[in-house]
Structure formats: structure tokens, C-alpha cells
Image (cartoon, rainbow over all chains, first blue to last red; front, side, top):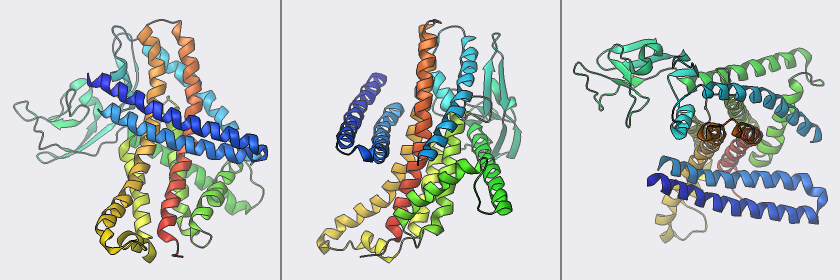
Length: 67
Length: 353
């Protein structure tokens, strides 16, 4: 039972991270469309914030693992 | 910038070339296992620390492993140093054994004359485990690279870089120009450069070594071990606190612009904030590296869960993809750890305005 609950918890964390990274990706697309010359800078900032959000999601996964 | 990226990609490809063949070996090794396959215990065994470095299990059940030294200090027997081969497969030696079940699984326990384990009287275990060997090898590799680099700079002075210099010089300059100077400031950054560079390259070398599954000392899950990340975060915490100036402590204990009746709430919050920053640093690195290892191992395990060769190509393709992702994560986590460390230090050293 705890295993199933942990899986549900991990899934919920993935929803949050997916929403977050999706928004970052979308906003980066908008920004690049507006200013194509800033492409590389926007890309770097995008990757960094995506990694930070992924880190938060992984907190949840670790908690789900420890259970 | 373009050349930096190009050099980075070259290194990526080099590493992926090695790790792909290594995964092949890993899979062959697992194929010899018969019977029901327990994926989760297999994965957890692989990412956990251990007293032996397991290489492969033969079809007849014999295992080939490197047995690492065990160093235990117990209250009754004092200091004991012996090979972990004497404790392999639940064997008992000098009253010590490796517990195989329950909460103490994988730990060295002391057994008394009646065969009972005293949980309140655990021996102090200072063994050279898999993680320790992995960490020391990473340190040695780092030392070799940077000492030879220092020697070549001493000989030729600052001229056009050659060899590994041309790969590392942009990285070091990147840490100085894009991490340390913008955050800490032009006047104070020099004092913290040694720590930031050490943290960056220690994490990076360990991350990359963890991605190469074979042969030892590669493939130990060093940065995915919370003790290691705890120590790294502790270093950042101590450096931050000891370099904190007057305005930093004023912000903690008498935040400017906050009415005095709010201070009983604000001070505890600020003190929790001091600890939560390095705590997040610790968990972030740990969770990222652990999750990477788990995902790669789970994808390999798919072959054995379905027990069919047809799954293998798909699984290997996904593992390769994840390996690429993990290469990115290895660099990114080293970068983020250094960036956030320099950010925390900058909060401690900046002048009030």
C-alpha cells in the first residue's frame, strides 16, 4: 500500500514539474521569437531554471522513495 | 562562447563512447541471472554504498568482486582491519558480520557469544567503502589533471593553451567571469575562487565518473550519496557564516525596516533561512544524481522484467538517451552548486547600501 501511495506521490510531483518546465519552455519560445539574437542567452537561462524546477520535483521523488 | 560549446560537445561524445560499451557489459552480466527478477532491490543494491565492489555474477552463482578493506573500532575489540572478503555472504569474522536483513541492512554489526546483536553498542565503521574509493579516485584524478596543468603554466607562462589546458582554461575562466565576479564582486572574489573551483571540479569529476559503469573505480554513486553532498553543503555553510560581515548579521538579527514587535517572528525565520539554503543545496545534488542513476538502471532492468531480447534494443536506446541527459545534468549540477554557493557567499560579504 505504501508503495502505491509513493508511486502516486511521485506522479503528482511529475505533474508539477511538467507544468513548470512547460511554462519555462513556452516563455522561452516567446522570448526567442521576439528577440532571435538573444537566443543563446535565453537558452542558458531556460536550462538553468528547468534544472532548478527538476530539482524540486526530485525532492518529492526522494521523499516518495524513502516513504 | 562557440568554441567553448564545441569543446564541451567533443568531451560529451568522448564520454558517451566509453559509457555505451560499458552498458553492454553490464547487461551481459545481468543476463546470467536466473529466476524471478526483483528490480527494485537490484537497483537499490546498485546505488547503495557497499563493502565490496561487485563486478559480475557467474552462471554457477559465484560472484567476482573486489573486496575492500574493513576498518572497525569496537568497544570490546578495539581497532580491527581486515578484508571484507571475510564477511562476504553473511560470514562472521572476529565477531563482526554484515547484517543482511532489517533496518541495519548492509551495516557492520558486532555479534556476542550468544549470537545476539547489540543495537545500542554498534562498532564505529571507518571502512574504505565503494563511495570512499570512488571519491578518493576522483580526488586523485583531479589532482593529477590540475598539478600537471599548473606545471605546464609554470613552464610556458600564459601563452596559447594546448592539450587539456585548452579544455579546462575556458571552464575556469567561466567560473571566474560568469559565476564569481558577477555575484561576489570584483574586490572580494579572489578569496573564494579556490573553494568554488574545487567544489565545481570535485562534483563534476565525481558525476562523470559515476556515469561510467565499468571498471572500478568508475561507477560508484558518490555525488548520489547524501553524506558527500552534506559535507559539500556544510563547507558552503561554514564559509558563508565565517565571511559574514556586519550588515549580513544585522539582516539576520535586526532586519532593517521591520518593526520591533515583528522581530520575535523574523529572527527565527531568518535563522531557519541560514540553514535551509545549504540544506536545499545538499538535497538538490543528491536527488539529481540519485534519480539519474535510478532511471538508467530501471531502463536496463526493463529487459529482465519483460525477460525478452526484443526489449533490449529499445531499452538500450533509452539508456543512451538518458546517458546524454545525465551528461548535461552532471555539468549542470556542478554549475548550479557553484553558482548558488557563490550567491550565498555574496549575500554574506556584500556591503550595505
